[in-house]
Image (cartoon, rainbow, N blue to C red; front, top):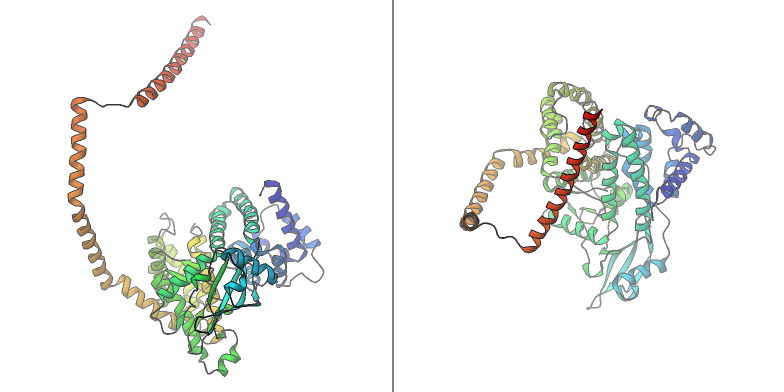
Length: 522
């Protein structure tokens, strides 16, 4: 059970571990809260020899602190405005790798979920092949009725991870509330909302049935795509703590030598990675938000296969339009339109000048367009954009955090496959298609059709609405002629309330009388 004292002790331990691993030496002094200099000086004194300046130490520290801190670190990698650009770069190197838990524990969790032994659920369950902060993956085999054996991937949730996360989350909220109370900058960054987003993401990630549903939804959205797919779910062997999917025979996307040896076109794979992400985010508003190379494979048919859908991002229509018009505005160098989109979305307060904001955006965009195409970073563009918006009181948009995080990762993966990838040229067809479909003449005709459909549905309901109105009118007419009939309990309650009102009125009159008497006498 989380208590203030427990939160304090856990935060003190976390601070000590981070200090010992030299993490605080990587924080930009300009980001330190006023009056905190002695604390940071003390942290430097207790750092282990040789840890100062080593970017890998933060991964060691967060792994020691547990799964919640690893996830928090990955999340903060997208927030250089909170932790500073240097520490954000360090966090991007953080790998979600943990020691596997014992095989017998995994088998006990499977048995608990399906009320039968693990070897009754699977014909064979191999040892853990990969272990992360939330779950680990085994290869399993299923004996089919026709005698064939089907290989599957079996993901098993870590034991006790949910309790650990609930306890650590209490500490994160305590720090966020303190930060918002103590600093206007903390309120602008919406630290509590940041923890809210992390909490929602982690809660969904710790129910593997939701991951199965995400896989099924992504499969439905992408069933017409020839260059992207996800593994199918075995629903009969999936529960809250266990997820079973088809086994993917493919090459990991970061094994460049194996991809070349298999005859795959690496630059084309880079294009597929970038365009798939943009297509899912813009067209569907639902995208894989953890597209690091360990979660991406290329199957023998040359299709990109995404696994591990524990973290998914959603964008509403407003956010999708915002993203499309921002990217298209930078592609066409229409800085005023980019600024107007921010105001139309309500992201920048209306008291600011659109023209001044457009000037600030031009300061970001023009240097980017002066560089060779293969040096343009859309991930860096979004980061700079969010930094500039801070000057115009734009609050943190939690719904855009996963988008920004995924953009950073996707661009890194695409650049590894093709260092000369032209981001604008790659993104332009997807963005232009979305704008033509959703903001062009076809979209206007569709809006008219939707409006006509809504009017038709309203007309269908009109007879019922008229009848309802007639019944209400009859009841009002009856009450006007015969008076309202109140239930005995209602009358009794009114009497009690009236009595309380009379007592308070009497007391008030006595107080006024006493004051008047005192005034007349003295």
